[in-house]
Amino acid sequence: MFKLFYSILFVFLLFFCFDSNAQNIEKTKERIEILASQEFGGRGYVNFGGDLAAVYIAEQMEKAGLKQFGESYFQEFRYKINTFPGKISVKLNNKTLIPGTDFLIGPASPTVKNKYPIFLPDSLLLNDTIKFLAELVKNNYKEKAFVIDYAQTQNIDIKKFYINIMRYNSWFGCIVELIPEELMWSVSTKVQTYPVVKIKRESFDKKTQMIKLNSKSEYVKDFEARNVIGYVEGEKDEFIVFTAHYDHLGWMGKDVFIPGAQDNASGTALVLDLADYYSKNKPEYSIAFMLFFGEEAGLFGSTYYVMNPLFDLKKIKAVFNLDMVGTGDDGITVVNGAEEEYKDIWDLIDKINKENEFFTEIKARKESANSDHYPFHAKGVKAVFIYTMGGKTYYHNPKDKPETLTFTGYNQLFGLLTKFVEEYE
Figure 1: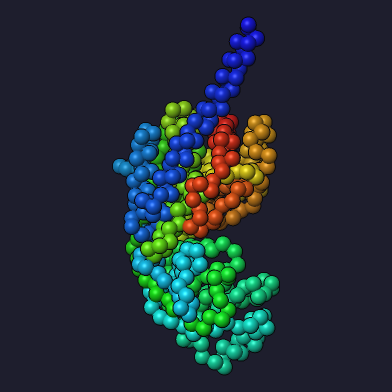
Figure 2: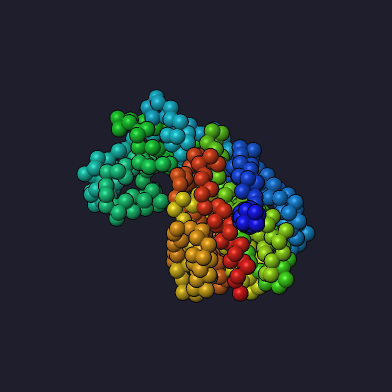
């Protein structure tokens, strides 16, 4: 009888302890659904998607009882951005392409309504860059669309040559990239004098003689953005900081919606889950929760923060930047984990993981300026960037939806982070 009682008690305690480290996974999924909804428009630059998301995040912080560093949870800043609020269409001869499926517009493209004869070099000319340049000198292609088929060359230097042709173009009226894999979009703080169109390779007929493009862009020189920041006061006036960027790409025209579930509604929701947890479990260190805007455009929110901190950066013990954490089938990667000055952080992460068997694999990666940890790192603040590995994700693509996320590493990552906060000195 006593054995049965203690067995039941043991199972109950195991469940309780496990649940306390991942008590909000259903809430996390709900938050990702909301953040990745069309109402928030990809948390981008059209239809006030970013503003709506900022208000929602601040409401979640208030519900958790987080304190404010100032009069509100918001830290405002501004920057330039190219947006696409209008309808966008592409025709090859008389065939209308499907936006988001067959093509995407280059993010620095200007407003354009024009048609261009096609210039599609064969593989021999494409792979002979000297002859290609001679062709540009000999003929006038300013009214034509240059079609780059990257599948026609395996030489990385030749590919870089054509990337530079595209980047510094003054020879063509339009540039078309044929993409053999999933289409990817981004945002730009600049506007080019010529349009770029990215077309799925199988959607382009090599017999095409004319491309017709109708695209409206709007260059916003003073876009208003907001970081959303709150904190839980601990026993010490030193901070562990959890960050994530909540912005994504938003709408491209009227038809292309990029939800950004993995990138980075997942990280935003995890930070809010941690905020819920620490609002009920007072930590030794104070914990700050920072949700940044403008990461996709160039780490603007996090850069603005470290240049205008709400408390002394010297009080920060460690920063954990969480970006794309909705999977975990194959473990996690820790950017900066392989840097010598991060040995204490990496050793503790590795120890906790082995003791608790959270992940079968965690990878330490060297320094990289690829997310919002980097401005802190550049200022001498210890900051790591964690992302999950595995699963089928769609980077910067309309298919990046909540239903593609597996959450196989979510509980483990939550447990790893909370135990790190408990043990770090």
